[in-house]
Image (cartoon, rainbow, N blue to C red):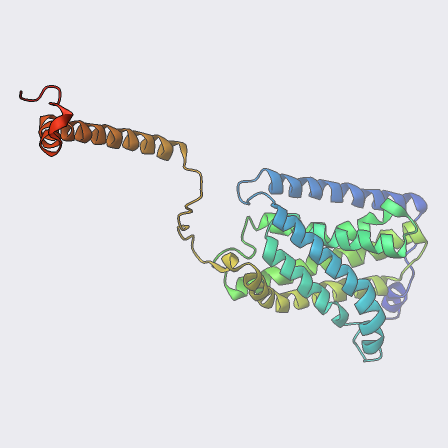
Length: 305
């Protein structure tokens, strides 16, 4: 027990070379995952392409995440709940953050949505509060979202799919929260802070940061997932449809090529029928009727003398 406690409380100090190796290795992993997510978002037939509405939703929720994360959460809620025993350990202050994140996932449902929202939040924080290392700090934002998006890709369209059960939403929410909090906390203690800030942690601190962030972020996202779905359906009602319904005919829509050709043929036939009817109506009987009504108009051509 004494040796275990000694190891747990010993500080992790890697050489500068190893710190650099792990730091740039994380960059390589993030870029590889980003390539997978971009391929899924742009080329895979499992998902529709991103729309302007998706981009606006991601931007708006990224701003809301920043407002909560660095203004409301840190300045107002954090000081209130920190005196509560175990509040910081349970990551309870992340609950509104995870709820907003799950609302974004429920609204967009496409690869890249988590990384986009977290990265907008991270960039706004850098612009408002500054950053000591510029783009080198981006790994902190990337590792909070990219693994969640890889999970969404691995689910092959199953996250918030039409007709998904509440249990499926809860499990997906737990995995998204776990992958948002756990890897980022571990990599921050293992390589980001030691390499960029010369800040070192003990093995016990790293373990506690990793499992508490992963577990409690996962539980918070799992609890938020069904409610986030309800919010998403209230904003965009079509997201709650369990089956595809035939859309009502749009009287102002442009006809398809086949429909236009069929309409043209039908119009031509109707025109021919109308012409024939008009010619029949203007035949000898019509001439005789005109002569009877107006004797001075003369005989119609082709009529009886």
